[in-house]
Length: 407
Image (cartoon, rainbow, N blue to C red):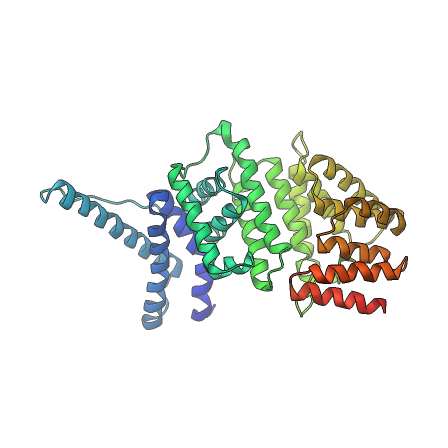
């Protein structure tokens, strides 16, 4: 890898690890210092490597510099307390141990994950902190992911950090008895983080993929830990693998969404599909099947490349189970699409109109699809409503193409 590519790559892969370890060492009270040290480490690397060239082991070099900067920060603070607060005759010979071993990095990220996914924070705040601290995303990238501005993101992150400080949230691994109850919020945050990349209206294809990959990486950390390697964790990673397997087939070169029926199935990633099956098998070892188990099973059937009655009957049955276990408007819409595949558009229209999701542009897109060839005038009416409600240029362009196809 060339020097101009290596540093951005290392920033993406190591920045958040350094922050997690330093935050674990300092606590949330000094989280800004941890972020500053991590940022300054990469700034030093950019300046030094540009003059002297790459070190033999760039990753180890970064960790050494980060450790030294963190040690200097602690010593400055200790020296101030000793000399200014306690007097000038205080002892200055002390050692600072900051563990940047692979094991401590992994443990620190897990502990930080549980701290960030604290019930005192809103889902948006949890995802924002996860993107910033656990994934190393910049403020500009987070703002793009949420389709908002930097000022809003900065305020949201500041308030979230302050709340964690006020509640004196510790960066520690939960007690064994608390893991299951706390794990639910962690998994929900990772699920939302993945969805932010997979279903969001963000215009950056690269960023969308990165969001999904980071959610999968954090999920895998849970699987690597014996205490959190539970069926529901494997079910969520299975779900992510199945969805990610179709990532490259879901968008065209212009950034427009390609509907499931129109996807080039040769672009589906067979390796990720195999991994999804592997984690789904591991998830089946438990006695209970939760929301992620059902969604993973639905996603599995969507990776079956041949459309058969059995495929769509299974998908419909699973959506019926999902709506009972965890109802959501999105699941209800998707279930209606499966119903059309099994029982025809006319019956699906009856069910769809019962949902009355009139303010949701995807609802009108679905009705536009269902009414096409049944009542093209109504199909056009729903697509026109969807066009008015759509927020992104890509969505609007896709709807406009559907409208033109009706004419």
